[in-house]
Structures are given as structure tokens and as C-alpha cells.
Image 1 (tube, rainbow, N blue to C red):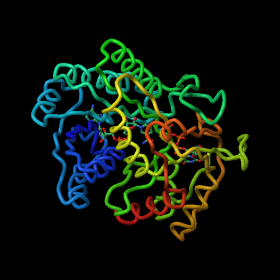
Image 2 (image 1 turned 90 degrees about the vertical axis):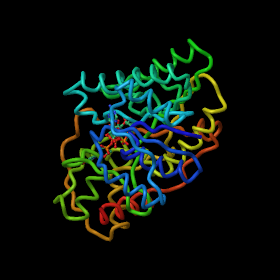
Image 3 (image 1 turned 90 degrees about the horizontal axis):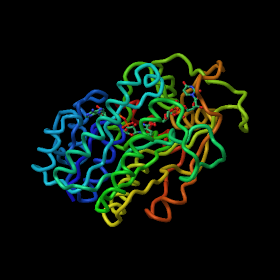
Image 4 (image 1 turned 180 degrees about the vertical axis):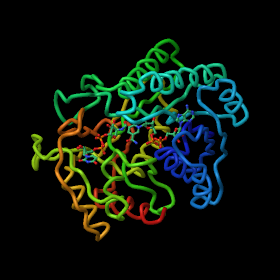
Length: 331
Ligand code: NAD
Ligand code: WQD
């Protein structure tokens, strides 16, 4: 199949580009480079032996997207392009709604004009909000707490309305939990600008000596050891989940939503221990106040993806840390 990856030079998209190319698909990437580096393209070439087709541009440029869809005879789109920093979305909600919601509407209009009606969308576990029960299954109420999470839910609703309006649409929304780790070549991985917000990139920079110590945001949560619990998922497992979702969506009309998580929750202390083993480095830390907006614990019920996509995550926390460490050392 000919597949367009919007935002395909970013963290998750680049790993999906590897998996899909290795599965025999023709991958085309559209990215405006607002949160990635063009070097990723060379690194993809090193891993794959050839670089995917690449267009620098914005997903909100409908004419450009239509020309790419036609030129590359695209069959399906995987839509990663968007902004993802929860805190920033609280400061700059218009920027988030414009890019994440406006960008998707523009993309869908281009797809409709070109009669391409198959799309996989990068949604997020943040659509669920404060847990009413755990693990979150796909039926859990959706009450996102930030403009970022709301933008993801709004896009899901738009996709549902679109598929209700025209039964030819084939739509899957994937709700990712906490993607971490890197390709085992160490050539691609998560490359946040400035001081990382997320736990594993921060821990990696402490282990390598770029940052002095980890600040653990609270050890008094109602969790087994008091630190926050999350469902970390290896980015290569997540990428393989996209290959399964692509097969599913090409055979099923309508709108479906799937959690992509492991079903296991790990605490901050468990992550620190696993990263210490993976890196053989000391990770100094201190306990500080809770971070505003954090939830004590959340993790996925991953059964629906297993049943309908035939996919489940295979790599454990130690492997996630080994690959995150390899990436931190090599890049
Ligand atoms: P990322 O920032 O690394 O990748 C997104 C890519 O999209 C970047 O390369 C960026 O340059 C590009 N982009 C942004 N806006 C664009 C636009 N208007 N036009 C063209 N390109 C644009 O992020 P990621 O971690 O790879 O996330 C990919 C998707 O998955 C995002 O939609 C994100 O919201 C979602 N998601 C990520 C996580 C996570 O923790 N990483 C969790 C849940 C969902
Ligand atoms: C994990 C745990 C922190 C940093 C975010 C988004 C979410 C999704 C994934 C896009 C928590 C603790 C962290 C640190 C710490 N993204 N922590 N010290 O907040 O679960 O999810 O990324 O959809 O929407 O909110 O991930 O990695 O920031 O935090 O103690 O320096 O680590 O309190 O318990 P989070 P995270």
C-alpha cells in the first residue's frame, strides 16, 4: 500500500515509517519540521537502505496535501502531525486547536476531494481524564483535562461524524499510553527540545550527566510505593500496532477506537530502577511537590486491540530503558 504519514519525521512517526517500510509498504512523509530534525530522514535511510519520500510542508496546506495524495497515489493516511505538550496547550490553546483540530479538518477535506477515505489517527489516553475505574477500557468516560486532550477528543468526534455521514470511510483512532524507548539501532528516538518534560527522556539525561538529578513529582500518591504509575509502551511495539491497525482499517468501514498500551502500570521508582540496570549509571533523585494536573495512576485495558487487531505489546520495561539508553548515548 501507499501510505502517507503526516508528522512522520517525529518520534512515533519515524518508528512507524521503519515498521511499515519493512512490511513492504511505500511510505511518504509530510512534516513541517516544527518538532523534529531533517536528519531523521538520513537516519531512516541508514536503517532502511532507502529514504522514504519526503515533503516539507504543513498539514493545514490543503492544496499541498491534495497534490501529494495524487502524486503518490496514496491509499491510506496515518495522521501523527500535531502538537503534544500538555502544559503548553494550557498556555496556547488556540495554537493547539488550530494545529490539531484545524490541521485534521484540512487533511480530511483534502482526502475527501481525492476520494481517499482510510485514516488512522494518533489519539491519546489523555482523552479519558481522571479515572472512574482502572484499567481504562475504550468505554471509559472521556473527560480530558487539558486543551491538548480536548483537541484529541474533538478530532475523534469529527472522525466519528464523518464516518456516520458516509459509510465508505474507514477510520481508526489509536489511544496511545506512554510511548518510550527507541529503535534498537540507536539511530532514531525521542529528541525533545530543551529540558524534557517526560520521565524517561529526563532520566536518560540524568544518567548521561547532562542533568544533575531527577525530580520525582510526589511520593505520597495512593499507589503501591507512593509515586505515579503509568503504562509505558515501547515505541517499536506501538509502531507494530500501527501495522496491525492498518490491516484492520483497510478491511473495516466505520469508526473504531483502540487503546495501545501494555496493560501494565509501572511506578516512577520502578522506572528509575530499570534505567539504573539498563545504563549501569547512578540516577540521583529528590522528591519534590506533585506536578499540577498529574493523575496518580493510569494504565490500559489492552484486550480490544488484542482481539480485533491481533496485536499486543511484547517488550518489557527493561527493554524500553535499554533502547532509550542506547539512543541517549549514540545521538
Ligand atoms: P512529535 O512531535 O515527535 O511528532 C509530531 C510531528 O508532527 C513532528 O515531527 C512535527 O514536526 C510534525 N508536525 C506538527 N504539526 C504539523 C503540521 N501542522 N504539519 C506538518 N507537520 C506537523 O510527537 P510524537 O510523540 O511522535 O507524537 C505523534 C502523535 O501522537 C501526535 O499527534 C501526538 O499528539 C500523539 N501522541 C503522542 C504521545 C506521546 O507521548 N509521544 C502520546 C499520545 C499521543
Ligand atoms: C510520567 C510519570 C510524573 C517527569 C504525558 C502526557 C500524556 C501523553 C504522554 C500525549 C508521572 C513522573 C515525570 C519528571 C517525574 N502524551 N515524572 N519527574 O504525564 O503520564 O503523560 O505524556 O498524549 O498526555 O500528559 O508522562 O513522562 O511526563 O510522567 O516524577 O521529571 O513520571 O509525575 O507520574 P505523563 P510523564
